[in-house]
Length: 323
Image 1 (cartoon, rainbow, N blue to C red):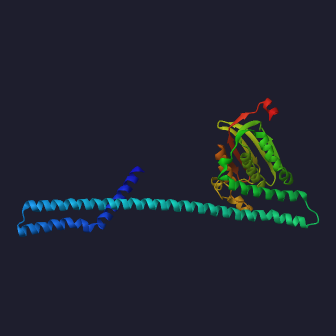
Image 2: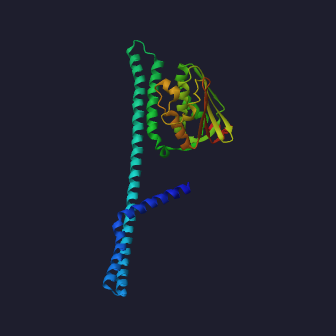
Image 3: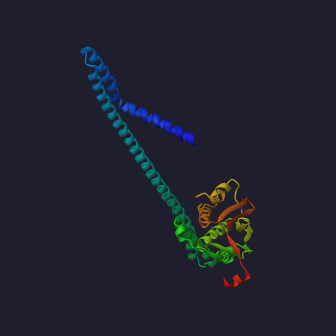
């Protein structure tokens, strides 16, 4: 890599030197023309050698000074041009990045508007009927609430470092808090939920950790038509692993390498037609900022397991009373 850079610098230097020579060809030719002229005149008029020597020396000194000034000015202009060019490239790059971010947000909110219209339209139809199904109404309202929360957290994500409050939390309480929020969906879709071995204290941010769990549970419920979801914890060499395992449709093997990419929906998302491709992307970003690890194991037709790795302490019996 270094030899390649050195070679590029040498090539650039050669190009600049050729450019300087081409721009100052007239100045460079003055010296040989003057010397030839002096030689001719001194021979014709038999001028004293000392006179010719001093005159030639003065000319050459002035010529070298002018040439050096031209050379210095050329390099200053070149450096200034390179500096301005670099600044312009950086400015264009920053503007391009900002434009891409704006475009991404516009795309997200266009999809968000499309998503939120569906439960609103469903509620409208339900309310127009003679009998309103309260459970279905609650589901549609929950979808609206989830979409709004997703939009807000998407906007907050870039600045979430200023919003972090890392403290010791009961893992079981955090999990139960999230599960309770989705209880009606579990019941309505006849999906069982199992919680096992969650008696640990974890160092995390309550709000953002719950957001990650919500996104994972939301995906599990979306792609599990029957069966169960199991949330458990186990100690490993890297810390505590929180596992969310479902018996859903699973993820295609060709989609697995890209599941954390921004905007990637995969085969399941394209079939769903309402997936934003931001859920797992945000989960990954949030976990990185919290210092947690996240990974996914899945087999098509058999289900998916999401693993979050974080630091923990085993809850003592006395601690359970104080929490």
